[in-house]
Image 1 (tube, rainbow, N blue to C red):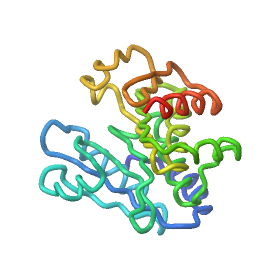
Image 2: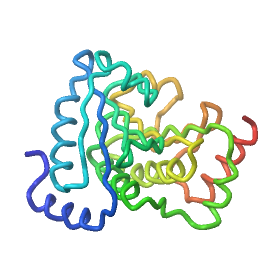
Image 3: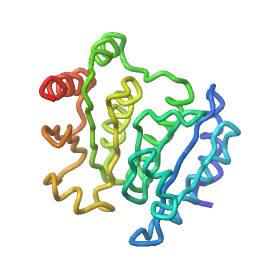
Image 4: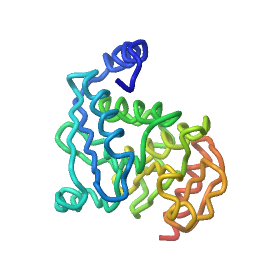
Length: 216
């Protein structure tokens, strides 16, 4: 058991507020993915804590069509989907462990409640974004500020289908992190064009997203 019983009970209590079912779609690989079995076990433990959570496991290569449906080309990758497979662009590349476990739980609750939790003025401005925007948030499991940055990216993604919010565990994807000179976390890379160092409040990320979308 990866989740201690006392924590399992707290998670059950949080999941009691869920209103709609959630699907966890996990892509693993037997090639260069030593953490995949442990991540899958963790996801199953979480799914077992609520009757409204379903875990679907796929192989990145043998289930190629399923991977293509969600534009997944790396493992381990987790997509948090709606009850009928609605894709809100919420991804976890790497293990949602350490401090990132909190962001994982928040993603489940947000999709279940069908509410991003963003301020009304932020929702209004995000609704006008009609260009594709990808927020890649690089993190490490020991970073206490990273979950907030990841959750904010996921909130933006949930609010607009043109926006995608990705958590990327930098130590599991070092080549990806090196490509964007990730020396400190959290670091949010927007459309591979702009970046933000550290955790920023909602209005700051909004301004950056709107600026990048205007250039697209």
